[in-house]
Length: 288
Image (cartoon, rainbow, N blue to C red; front, side, top):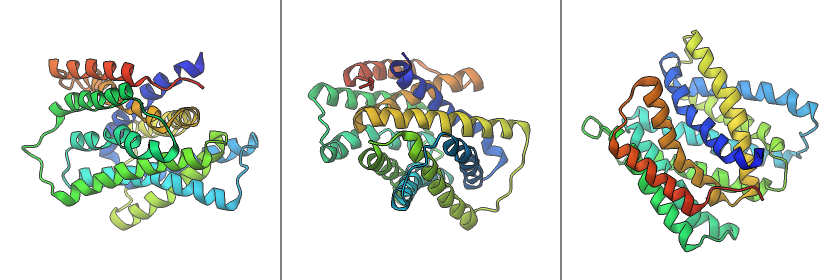
C-alpha cells in the first residue's frame, strides 16, 4: 500500500517546498540558506546511515554520488535562484523546469533503453500544456526585465536536474537509495557553499518562521521527499518518474491559494483538469 501511495505522497511533499521557501526568503540569501539546509541534512544523515550500515560505497562511487548531488540539488537550485534574482519571473522558471518530462522522454529514454509509447507521448505533451495553463496567470511579463543570458541560466538548471536524474538511474539504480543520499548532499553542500562565498554576504536573520521553514525543508523535503523520489526512480523509468512533476504546479497553486489567498481562476482550474487527464494517459509510476 505504501508503494502505491508513494508517488502521490512525493508530489504532495515536494509541492510544499516552494511554499516553505516563500516563508524563508525574507530571512536569508538563497545560497546561504541552501548551504545551511544541505549541511544540516548531512549532519542528520551521517549517523543514521552509519547506524543502519548503509554507507557501503568506494571512494570513486562516493565522488560519483557527490557529482550527482551537485547537479541534482546544487546546480539545479542555484541556477533557478540566480535566474530569478536577475529578473526571470518565477512562473517562467517553473515553465522551463516543466520541460523536464519531455526532455527525459525524448533524450534520456533512448539512452537508457526506456520505451515511450504514443499514448505516453500524448500524456507528456498534454501535461506540459496543463502546467503552462496553470502557471501562465502568475507570469508578470510586463514588469519582467531579463535577457537571453538569464533564460540560459534557467536552462542550465533544467539540464542539471535532467542529467543528475539520469546519472542517478544509470549509476546507482542497483543500490539502496539510502546509500547515495549522503554523498549527494555532500556534493550539493560544497557547490552551494562556494556560490554563497562568491555571491553573498552570509547573513541570516533567524526567526521562528525561518527556523520552521528550515526544519520543514530539511526533514520533509531534503530527506523525506527526496528519499521517495529516489525509491520511485529506482523502480521506474526516468521519464515516467519525472512526469510526476506536472502535478506540482497545480498542487502548489492550490496551497498558495489556501495559505496566501493568491488568485485561483477558472483558467487555472481548467489547467489542473488538463494535467489530471495527462497523468492518466502517461500513467504515474507504479511499483515494479
